[in-house]
Length: 284
Image (cartoon, rainbow, N blue to C red; front, side, top):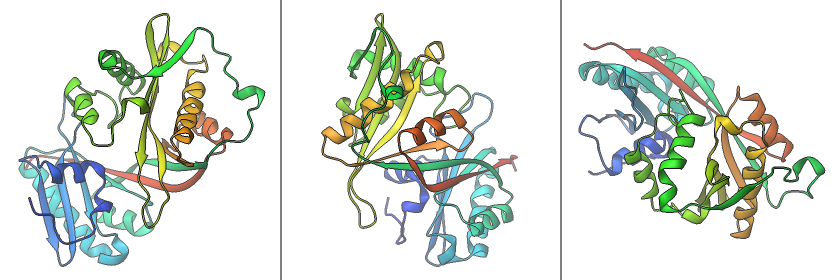
C-alpha cells in the first residue's frame, strides 16, 4: 500500500505498523495535506472491539477544524464496522489536541510522561545497591517466552495496550527488526522468571541522539516489594551504556506515583507529556 504524502510519525507506532501490514478493517482519510488512520488495536478486549486512531501532521499545521473532521470520519468508520472503544494518542499533547478530540467526541483518558536520563548514572548510593537475594539476571531465551508472557499479563492486568497479550502478539513483537534477545533481560529466582526489562534501541534522528528505551518492564505481583524493579532498571541502563548509547528514555503513566518516584530517584526527568483520548462508539 502506498503511504500518503504527509509526515506520518504523529500517527504513532501501532498505526505505522498497520500501514506496513494493513488490517482489512483499517481505513485512512485525507483532507488537503493531512491524513488520519483508524485500525483495530493489537490487544483486544474479550467484551468489546478496541480501535486506535491517529492523525498527521500536528493540529498546529492542519488546524483544529480539519483535525476534528478527520477524527469524525474515522469514528464513523468504526460505527459502520460494529463500533467499539477508540483510543487516540497524541505525543506532546497541546491544547489544540484537546479541542480537536473534544470536537469529535473523544474525552481525555490517560497521560504518559516521557522521561530521559543521560548515562552513565551518577555513583551508586546505598539505596541503589542490589539487596535482593537469590535473583539472577540473564538474557532472554526462546524457551522463556511463555513465562515472560505470563509475567507481562499479570503485571499489566487490565492495561489497555500492554495487558492481555497473546503468544502470537509477543512472537510478532520479537520479529520486529529492532528486537535483540540481549536487550531483553529476565530476572529469575528459584528457577522461576519473576520479572523482565525489555530494552529497545532507537537510532539518532535530526532531533534526537541515539537512545536506549526501557520499552517494557514488568515484575510479577508475587515479587512486588522485593526491589526487583529497581534492579532490573539499573541493569538495563548498564546494558544500554555498554552498547555505546548514552541517553535512555522510558514512558510511564503520570498517575503511577511509585514508578515515577523510582525513575526520578535515578535521575530521569520529564521531557514530554503524551495524552490518550477515548470514545465509546456505538454501531451504526
